[in-house]
Structures are given as C-alpha cells and as structure tokens.
Image (cartoon, rainbow, N blue to C red; front, top):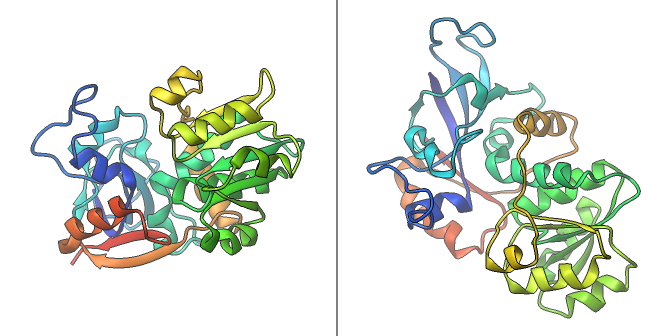
Length: 280
C-alpha cells in the first residue's frame, strides 16, 4: 500500500471521466480516476521482496493494463494498493513534484521515441511538442542525439528551444516550415487529428517511421500505429529524470478536494505544465 504524496493529472483522466472509452473499453462504475502518483510504501503484501515499507516510489497504476482498468486502482486518493509491476523506486535525485509528473505523459513520450528506434542519425518531427507527452518525446530524442523539430504555439517556442528543439508554429504551413529544416526521418504525434497526420504523411519518405499517442480515424487511415509501451518504460523515464535529461513543467499544485477543477483545467488545455494534486 502506498501513501500518496502528490498525484499527477493527465489528459487521459478527463477523457476517462467523460466516457471517451465507453464503447471499446468501458470503465467500471463507480471508479476512481488517475494513473500517476508518487508516495511512500506503508505496507507490502505477502511474498513482496523487491520493495519495503518506508520506500519512496513512483506509481503508474495503468501499466500493462487496459486503458480503463486503471480506474479500479485510480490514484486520485490518499492511499493506493497497486501491483509491484506498476511502481518503480523514486531515485533520490528526483524531487516529489517531478516524480508525480512523470507518469503517464512523460512515459508516453519516452515510449514513442523508443517505438521509433530514434538514434543520433535521425531528424524527428514532434507534433504537440510543448505538451506533457510531446515535451518528453523531445527531451528523450535529444538525449539520444537526434535533431528535433517540434510544433507548438509561438508563446512556447522559447521553451522548446530550451529543450534543444527547433520550434515551428502548429498553425502555420507545417509541411513547408519543416522542410526548411531539411528532411525528417521519423514523426511522433502527441496530439492526433487531421492536420498532424496530413503533415506527417506529406513529410515522411516512403517507409518512414511514424507513431501516435492519440490514435483516431485519421491515423488509422494513414496506417500510423498507436505507441507500443515497453515493460520497462517507467524505469527508463525515472532513470532519465535522475540524470537530468528529462524534466516536467509543473503548472500548479491543488488540494485533492479540487480534483474536479483540475480535470476541467486539463481539459481546457491552456496550462503550461502539469497540474498536481496533494492529498489532505
């Protein structure tokens, strides 16, 4: 059992609450939102030897589960029971706020770059590069030595430059703007939708690599696959964070009682960074 110190709020949380997955993967009701948190182990089950009472951990309670299965062990609570496959030790170099912000957005960003097999020989286009998923993808690609071009609104361009990416305005002619930087070899889509899919198809050469974190009819028609999540994704993200190669922007910390307000803010999409919840 983990006593949560901070809880991360992710876009998938409001989508679950809004019923986005009811047709394909219905969530149990009543259920608890949330997949991301960090806290201290207060009890362990019989046979658990890899973790101990008093240990600080990072929680991704949806790891290796169907999307809505996480609502059975949602993190929007003070105490949480999870499988040991869904936690990793919190490195001492990673602060509590950063740890709470890593799942599931940063995890998805890492997994997209891993899925693409990005190396120093690549030039990667990241759609939605300033968001939680996209900014993680940028940082992981940069850590691997790749050249990165990222789409974002102009007020986020300085932020992308600070991460090592070349920013372009997502509202501009993406295809010609990217071509000004030369050919790309891979595309990681953190937002989905017709515009990003169309640009990816136009920019990638035949046989180019593409992946999306938000699949839809457009990506399906273009045969762009959903991101595949490796079993060690949370461990890898925690390791990158401990090395200082991956950081999460934190927008605000609210009391857990304000979870509904936090979900509304994340749905609106105007936060510069992750919203966290603190159990009272």
